[in-house]
Structures are given as C-alpha cells and as structure tokens.
Length: 356
Ligand code: ATP
Image (cartoon, rainbow, N blue to C red; front, side, top):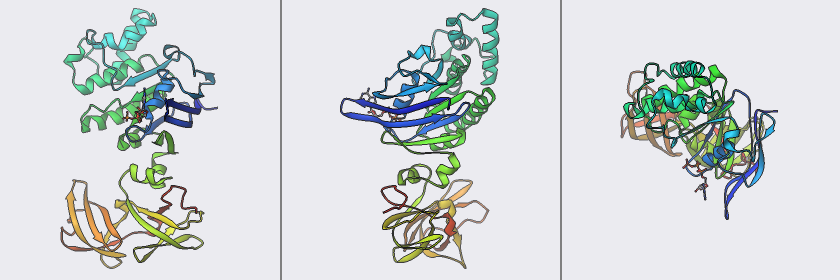
C-alpha cells in the first residue's frame, strides 16, 4: 500500500468542479510534482492533502490512516505555501524553532535541531537575523527550514520558489532535492514551472482541467506524452496535423501536407485525423539527407543552443541546434532539415492515442 493515497477525490464549488474523480498514489520517500497551468486544480489538490480544503467526495489515506476529515494540525504534514510569510518579529532561529517550541521540545534539543536544519539549507550564521534583513532566497529557505525542522512524514510545497530569480531558483531546485533525498521526506510539489518539476521529481502528474492527464517519470512524460495537452505543455514541440494512410507492422504512414511520414505505432493502431509531434531538438539541420527544405524565418542564439523557426512545406518547424561553434544558416537562407522516424510521436487530437 502506498504512503499517500487519494481515492476518488472530487472538489466542487457550487456548480463548478475544480477536481474530478482524482486517484493518486504517492510512495514513501518519493518526490512527486503536480504540474499544470493556472486553474487546473493543483493547489486545491494540495490543500485537500494538507487539510485546509475538504473534498466533496473520496478519501485520503496517509500511511494507511484515513485523514480525510482530520484537522490539519493533527496530520503531521509540513507545508510551505508561497503565501506562508515568516513571522516578521521573530529571528530566523525563532521562525525555524517555532513549531518545535509549540511541540514543547526542550531548549537544548531545539537549539540543536535549529542549527542542523539551518546548516542543511545553508543558512548557518544567520540565526539572529530578522526576515527583513534577508534576501528573498534566504527567506524562502527559512520557510523551507521551518517545515523541515519538524521532520514531517510528508512535505507539501506550493510554488515555494516562485519569487526567486532564475539562477537562485535553479540552485534551490538542486539543493532542495538533495535535502529531500537525504532526509527521505515524501514530498509533493505544486508548480507550473516544467523545468522545476523535471529537475526535482521522481514522478510528475501533469494536470489539466481538474484531472491528471499523465503520471510518469519526467523522462517518460517528455519522451512519450500521453495526451496532446501533455505534449505541448511539457517543453516545446512541433505539432503537425495529418491523416493516417495505413498501419504497417511497426509504423503508421501519416500524410502531412502531401508528404508521408513514418511514425512509430508502439503497438497501437492509429486511424483518422491525428497530430504528429516532434521536439525541436530532434530536428537537425541536414545537407545531403534532408527530408524537407525550408527558409529560416527566425534565428536566435541562447548560449548553449540556436533556436530557429523554419518555414517548410510541412508547416512551421521549430528547430533547436546545440551550439557546436559554427552558426546555422541565418534568417532568409534556405536550410535542409532531417529527423529520425523513431523520434516522431502520434496522438489523436482528442488524446486517445490515435484510436478511432
Ligand atoms: P494556480 O497555479 O493559478 O494557483 P491551480 O492549478 O493551483 O492554479 P486551484 O487554485 O486549485 O488551481 O483552482 C482550481 C479551480 O478551482 C480554479 O478554477 C479556481 O478558480 C477554482 N477555485 C479554487 N478555490 C475556489 C473557491 N474557494 N471557490 C470557488 N472556486 C474555487
């Protein structure tokens, strides 16, 4: 039995259904992200686990215990919400030790736990500072330390790094993941930042309209999106509308703008109108073996790679080329493009894997 189990959870606000029949199993020690656009129900789901929102239907089990109607403070869950401000009149040590004091932990033991936790989040030496004397990133780490100091069985994070600048956020992703692994705290993160979700998670639940569109490892979610929504939400992709001509043993022949593409079937029968997807980094600039020719409409350099938009007979293709030194063809120039058929994906626009 998994550590946390959400069974048939729905949440309705009047006529509006925010969450619909959601099932989710989280394993002990796992880092799971709820990823999705604004309004898809991520926060509502997390709030139900935390106990701040009561589900309309279903139940929540934590380590086999039914906590559906248990008060938040009884659940032993650590929570870091974006809006969870630090206590401004308390020092860093006071903030981190607050919950422990409430729990009546002895002073010496408390001091030790505070020191250990601050070391963990690289804030040693800042114990006596007040929140207003800290940077945004340091404050955020105090909030995380405050939750971790309680050594919760389950840690819930709702966009806890959204106020940090890009570089600090990247560092925090790696640090926080390392801490989580070291302490083995089962963690659920709510985010709309796909890089954040991919960097930190064992598994990602991609949410859309109050449901889970896909639940898989970050690699699987990126490489084999289960729905058109997951395809386009997680990373950039090229979407080509096509029509299935026939199913061969290994691949489907799909007609796109007069050309025939051979798309892996992966054991599925695909029929009718479909979308063919290919990631920009899977399209390469080719000379001899070009599959299609086009004209570069835009060329942007972002350091580690070049991003091109190429107008082709198949439609607009986004192409990402690693920076190997020589720049790719410039805007207005013609360019040949190629790909490996294995890198093509096919889904029906309704998301049922191309089934009729
Ligand atoms: P964001 O990333 O913007 O925080 P989210 O995915 O976390 O979005 P939720 O906050 O879970 O989304 O909200 C899901 C849906 O439920 C939204 O359409 C929201 O307007 C609605 N909703 C949330 N709380 C309430 C409420 N108390 N009353 C009515 N509707 C609500």
